[in-house]
Length: 248
Image (cartoon, rainbow, N blue to C red):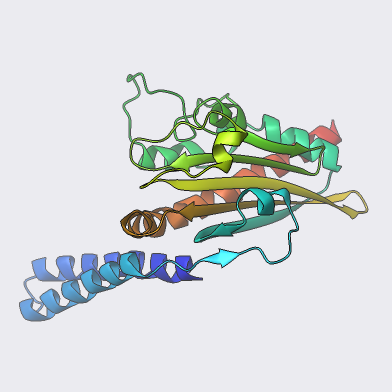
C-alpha cells in the first residue's frame, strides 16, 4: 500500500508541478499562483519519496520464496489465469523472450538508457529481443535459488549502487552487506482444474536499515509503476506463449 501511495504522490506531484510550469509560462496566469502550484507539486514529490518503508514478515510459509526472503520492506504481486497445463506454462515461463513482452525493452531502456550502437553488457535491463528473459537474468547477477518441479521457481540477486555479485544460492542466503538490498522473485503455478493454471509472480526486497533503506525506498517509488507494468506484460506474454503452444 505504501508503494502505491508513495508512487502516487511522486507522479501526481510531478504532474501538478508540470502544470504549474506551463502556467508560469502563460501570460494570462498569475505568476504567484503558478509558483504555488509548482511548490505544491514539489512538496508531494518529496513526501512520496520520503515515506518510511514498512517491514513485513511471512507469518505462514506458503511458497519457497517465504524461505528465501521471509521478511521484506518492498513487495509486489501479480497473477493471471492461463488456459494451459502447469507443465506447459512452466516451460513458457522459462522460454518467453524480451521481444514477446510488450513494452519490456522500452521500459527497461528508460531505466538503463543506452545507444543502439553501444556495447551494453547483457542484464535484466538490457535483454536482446530474442533472448529468454530468465536466461539473461541468470547470466547477469541473478541466481536460481530453487526450482520445485513445475510448481515454483525462485531467483534472487543483490541490488545497490554498482551492483553486487551473487555467486550462488548460499551467497544469497547471507547478508548482502551495507548499502545493498536482497531481492527475490518467484513464479508460482497452481492447477485450477478444467485446463486452467493460475500463474503468480511475487517480488520481495529486503533492504539494509538506515540510509540504504531510505535511498532504496525513493528508488522503488520512482520505478514502481513501470515495474508493475513490466510484470503484468510479462505474465501476458507467458500466457500467450503457453496457450499458443496448446493450440498448435
